[in-house]
Picture (cartoon, one colour):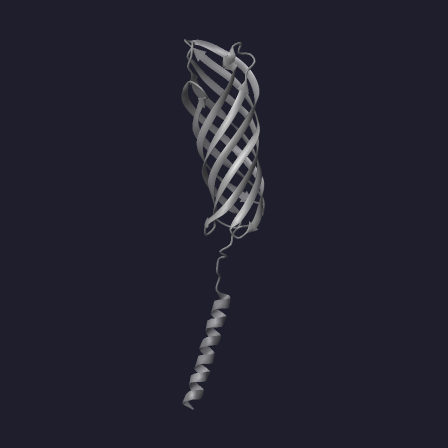
Length: 210
């Protein structure tokens, strides 16, 4: 009789534990979801002319759209398009010291990234990009304004960032990038109109998976 009571109690307890485990809500470990996404970034950095000059500030706001491809739980690939606009400034030092302001009216860049798990729902990404930028040149030297006109240049980028998949739909992003932009402002008569500008920067943003 005692053994029968123990068996009944054990069976009841096992049934209760199984039902409780089945009804518990457990968040999935794997949040590496594929599919399209759209979001935005704010980019802060320094701008300087390659070769000579003193750096100034650079600021860009960017819209980012793309598609994520899940390879497995630990790896993913992302392909995207960045549309950005902003400003950059630096001092061009030489025979004339010119305070230069570059209006980055529109930067269009194709990007590709490889991501690897940092643990949990976070991924680290190496990214590279290439595209075009439409810009305008304004300068000042000894109180004299210089209008350098416009230029359509080539832009490239390398970057590393961390993507935290906060939910099934929302990602948080933070990282660092190095952008190179080549210009040819034909309204500037000497070789000062053809140059390379470098922009090391940090950025943060959010995006939604569609």
